[in-house]
Every structure is written in structure tokens, then in C-alpha cells.
Image (cartoon, rainbow, N blue to C red; front, top):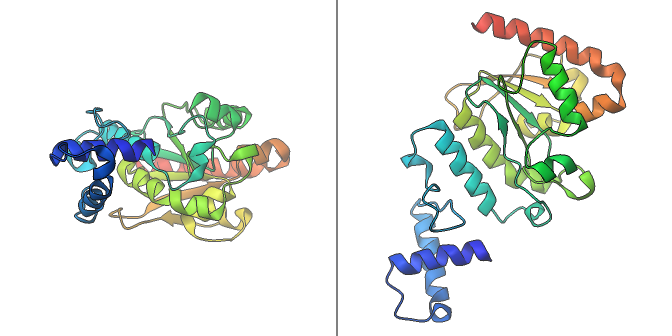
Amino acid sequence: MEYQNNLLQSIQKEQNFNSLSYSENKEALLAALWWYHYQGVEWAWCDPENKASQTSEGLTSLDEQLQNLKYELECFQECRLIDTAQHTVFADGNPAGGIMVVGEAPGAEEDRLGKPFVGASGQLLDAIFQSVGWTRDHVYITNVVPWRPPMNRQPSVQEIQVCLPFLQRHIALVKPKVLLLFGAVAARSLLGTMEGMAALQQKELFYKNDLLQEPIRLFVFYHPAYLLRSPGQKRAVWHQMIRLQKFLNNKV
């Protein structure tokens, strides 16, 4: 694969293997790559000449760390959705705003533009935020899976599992004051539960993982795509927004 060849060529430069042909070196270079991996060294670039991509330890700003995480996703080959997607849909909005929104996966319009929630569901999400005076500058939006599943199907359990560590790191980097999970896929993926959405919306929920120093308050919402099909559930979303506003007012 191209990303592996780039990595191997980079190691070949650094390890002075240039005296042999590339084909002769490939097995030895792969062994060197795995040796570095087990020493805790991570490669996060697709292009070895790209100086912006490096391990997160050497990065200082949040924007740099998020950009590095995006590069890692773009190089990731364990989720085959990347083969059929046009873009890696990473995030949109303000990562310093304190409010992080997590959806399910990109749809056709999101995949075309490379941004989350920009289709009809995104327009409804923007309207929900506008009802309390927010724009996308107030929130930071991502998805459980960053690539569009074919035919807009739901991501599979396996696809979610291989992408989840990236989302966990994403949340740990942003450190939001509150997480808003839109849809059952996001709720079940991050909460590890099969409980229904109606029941989850009645609970005081928190999210935690090993990368976080303390749990993050969490609110569950119906996905905007579901609301477009079932507009009668918009009342439940409004009720959740009132609860969210009360929480945020108490945090100030």
C-alpha cells in the first residue's frame, strides 16, 4: 500500500539501507518498522516529506495535535470504508468552545464536502443550535466513524470498534465541558449500552475513558435524520436543550 511504501522508504533513508535494492530490503524494512512500533514510536504521516505530521508528544497547540490526529486517520488502513469514501470527514467548528458534538457517520453530502453535518440533517442541527443562540463557532462537531458507509447504511460494529480509539483520543485532546451525542450509534458506542434513547435522555450521564483525568457530562439527543422522519420527537430535543442550558449556566 502507498502509505506503507512511504513509511518503508522513510526508514530506508534513516537506516542507511540504500546500498540494497528496495525489493531486497522490503522484509528487513518491515521488521524495522514493527521494531520501532513496539518501542512505542508511532508514524502518523502518509507523506514522509510532510513536516506538519509528527507524533503528538512534540506538539504544543491543540490545532497541531488535532491536525496530527487527522493525518493518522488518513493513513489508517484497518477500516475499509476509507476505500469507498471521498474524504476523511474529521471535524468542524471550534475545538476550544467547550461543547463537543458526536454524530454517527458522514452521509453523501458530508462525504462530498469533507465536513460533518452539512446535508439536510446538518441544517436541522444548525437550527437546533440557533434556537439557543449558538452557531458552529460555539460547538465542535465530529462523528464516531469518519468515513461514509456505502449507501448511507449504519456503520457496522466492527467498523465502530476500529474507529473508536481515534474518537477517544479526539475527545481527550479537546477536553470539552460537555458532550452531545446525536443518535443511537453515538450513544451506544461511547456509553457501551444498548439502552433506548428515550430512557437515556432521562438520565444524568457521564463519559470517561483512560485518557481523561475526570468524567465529562454527557447529553443524548435524537439524530437530526430521525427528527426529519419523526418531527414529533422535536419536543424531546427541546427538552434536552433546556437541560443542557441549565447545566452550562451552572458551570459558568
